[in-house]
Image: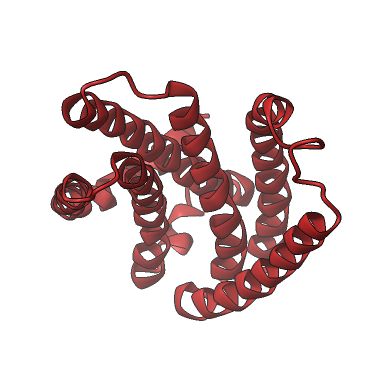
Length: 224
């Protein structure tokens, strides 16, 4: 665990250059939200964008490592390839969760200040979990692609895969609506509200586990 902690600290030190950029983006997002007519739509956008921003910034460490040819240096230390991969997943996961938490805090503050009433905490939490799930889908494809083909080629492969998955999910959702699976009498309403957060958390764990195993497979075969 000390090795993984050290690798995460190494990446955090690389990301300190993004501090001013993140603050600037946060200021722009808040300013944009304040100018919107609907507070609920604006704060929803805030949670999604802040979560996305933190997750994508963490992914930037792959480019730093590739430019510095860091893998050869890291593997001279007592660190296994699985630990190197796990450290990246933990970094991206932690950054995404921190982004979601910050998004919720900012949303609550803005709602209290502008709406002058208590926000719907259940909706905010659900939106944060949904945002984490969305970033999980992106990074779970992106990390294996980057490990296998490098930062530049990996991004291209990731966009292609995500496009295919997006069309597939869109087709399934359309089919579900056609069959009435999302009508008020079936999966919509209180039951969905109760089950959805736990289902998303379960899916996040499953998706990340599968992605991690695929990434380990690619990293084991990677030439350093």
